[in-house]
Amino acid sequence: MTKPQRSVASTLNTFTHTDRFQLADVLQIFQRVFIRHDVDEVEAQFGVGLPSTTPPIAAVEDRVARPWFFSRALLFFGLGFIAVLGTYRATGNPNLIPALVFMGSFAGPIAVAIFFFECNLPANISLYAVFRMFIWGGILGIVLTLALSTLEGILATRWLGASVAALTEEPAKLAAVVLLASRRKCPWTLNGLCLGAAVGAGFAAFESAGYALRGFLEVLMESNVSEANTALIDVMTTRGFQSPFTHVVWTAITAGALWRVVHDSPLRSSSLADWRFVSPFIASVLLHFTWNSPLLWSLPYAAKPIFLGAISWTIAFGLLFTGFREVREAAALARPNG
Image 1 (cartoon, rainbow, N blue to C red):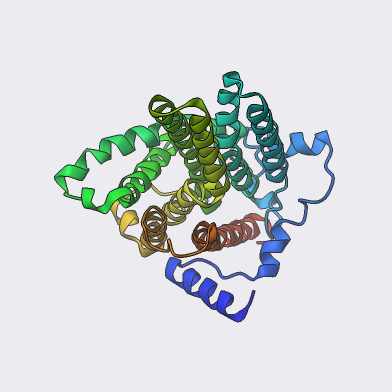
Image 2 (image 1 turned 90 degrees about the horizontal axis):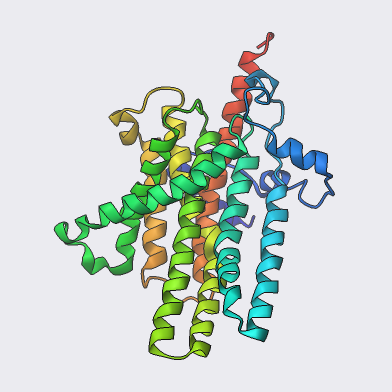
């Protein structure tokens, strides 16, 4: 990192009360991405979180997690999207629209959710639990958002335009995580990051698919098939590119921050007033608000999502390293000589 970048990262870490880290620390996480892995390693990576496959906390020895399968998932979905997109452009076959929407909407969110799943050092959350949070959490987040949206008129917030979504969607997604995970034994910050990312991924995927299909049908009714195809492709490529920087990481941040405060205690109102939760939550809401607002539109194309995404991921990595430290300290205390 350059000196200004380190200064910004340090400021964000201080504001959100997360552990500081260096670029070398982040690169250490990605050490295994470019190494070849066989089928047994894939099964071992995902065969965790069950009663028989969850290790005791004392058995955790790694300093940081080293995820790698997320990159394969992103590559798989990305190549699939490009293949379907090329075929759709060449043939115009409407039967390819569902595949195009699915690949474009789900690629980024699923890959990022897998990343946080692989970063869960305690290995106490199963792939089934993540899949459940992805489906039901995503749906519940949308339902709760629609319920909260009815308050917009009462609170006279419609003048905020699209930015008002930050005030409804972030609390709704976090509530979905809490409601679905309240009975699970998942006390770690890393658990909150994992579960939050799963709900955020489901929310992002379903929302993107809805926007894409709605835009396609609206243009189709008002214009011709060619323009409708162009609108669909534009939505899918734009939202597909932006998805790793939005809902998945924002919800991971808010849930991870809440799990850090609550740990293995019941959720209390005092937890929601703890600045270690409040500051990351405010950061996520502000990032979402700015993303939807006209602010920073003067930046060149793609600069705005990259800039806001860099801030989001700086906070997320701060929480990840906080979580890694928590688990290491707990593992050391749990060992006989601890």
